[in-house]
Length: 176
Image 1 (cartoon, rainbow, N blue to C red):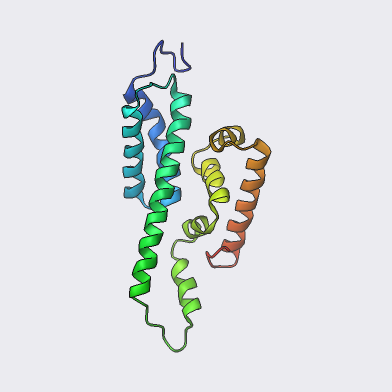
Image 2 (image 1 turned 30 degrees about the vertical axis):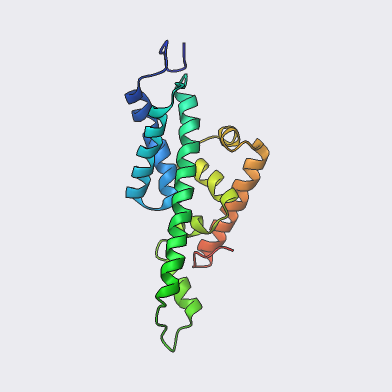
């Protein structure tokens, strides 16, 4: 019998209702966009339905879906960043004489401080922090999903929090 009390894999609607809020929070924090996060979550559930081998329980589905939505979200962000870079290349913002382009860039980045700070983190720091803070996963669960040790998860989350805190304390969201 699985951990959900079902003799067979749990019904799809139970998996969906149980896990959608978790994977949605993960995707939202990676993408920063509610509609995109929802679409990516639905894509992840479609991939789950298309699997020929059914996952035995909610926990297996949870880990699998988190990995899928993480990858979908990061791929979406990479594509979006490439589009932004291409767009900015062709449409330079006019800079007033009293404000440098660097100051203007920093000012624009502070509109959504927390999201910007998260976006600026390298992948290996951002994902564990998002999993911990927004998917409410334990260090052990994060380690299992990312295939790293629990102590490595703790170090990465500590470093990510340090960088986000520093970025927010400095009043800008830019983290190098």
